[in-house]
Image (cartoon, chains in turn red, cyan):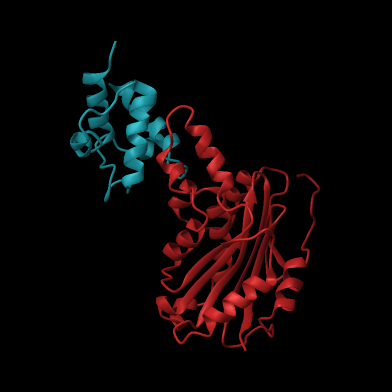
Length: 210
Length: 85
């Protein structure tokens, strides 16, 4: 049995960890939320400003998820896996890149026209070198994520896995990341039902804007 | 030259999303890559785009890149000597 030891969400410009709201900026745009969020969380990482929106969302999620988790103190870099999924892949960035092509195509945007670059940014930041996979799915699919993460965790090599959903299209965004380990510290078994329950939990005030 | 250098600093910050910096944080002779501002190869491509967009200058020989993009000052000197009227 594997366990969900930490989990976080970013929805409606509200960042929450383990069910507690850590930061929110519901009045501004998603870009405002991301940039002010980085400052509010006291994260110094200049490369963040170069990232696209999917990567920024995944980066902030992983940051709060792994802060204080001591992951790479307990595991070797290649013992930590990353398994993520989204519905819109890199479409948000693809469209911005397409727009830039009307004048001179932006090389800085081009490098983000891949869905799995968010996983790469997280791995670079945290020194993770284990298995990684990124799926494009019609919607959050607890069964698919659970099955694949269990398969990765069943390998001799993997001891922990950062997994979850990081989807963005325009102002619409939906992030649910969690940390799976073989040891139990939070009493949450890694099952499809548990993932679905955590994903559907609502935290804090939610506005109705698109 | 002073105005061009000031313009370049603002344009570099905007084009490269260096939101953590202000124009005054960039020295005229400060290396742009590695030990200076820490720019990377993708940033180098964005600098080439910047020259084309703002100054209508196309880099004729990519081998010249490291010398042209050594600092804001070397960029300004290159623009001054290559800008079309």
